[in-house]
Length: 165
Image 1 (cartoon, rainbow, N blue to C red):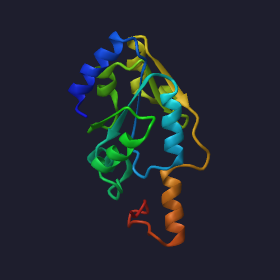
Image 2 (image 1 turned 30 degrees about the vertical axis):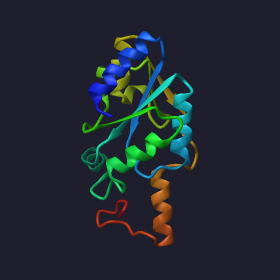
Image 3 (image 1 turned 90 degrees about the vertical axis):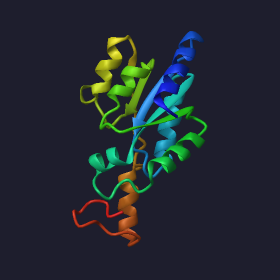
Image 4 (image 1 turned 60 degrees about the vertical axis):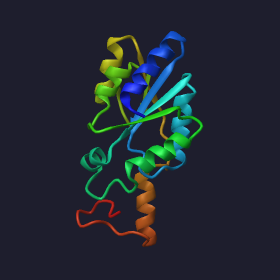
């Protein structure tokens, strides 16, 4: 979905007094930890919008061998989840601009973050929104999935020692 369309929907949700929750991430190899995280985020409000890092953004953040799945595929899978209402792809390293423009009532990130490491959190505070950290699901991460694949020989580490996918 385009950001301009989401901004119009956001105005409608505000008029209808619906609580909008926003989160963002790469969501490259979707796993149960992601599903539980998104379900927990959705439970905090009425509408869940997911900001999805573009392929270029993922490469900058995770390395040249990522993403495994292109943004269009990642967006399609996310949008198919019951917990997710809207998905918007963004090119920046952080979701600061999306947060500024959408002004969600609640901004959610995983428990592996801290409020002082989230520039989006400061933006949310300027308009009276809240930032909530949702606990991580132990042992469930894309990095763990990739490491297990490497251990089985299904994939090998790249020349840089990273994922190799």
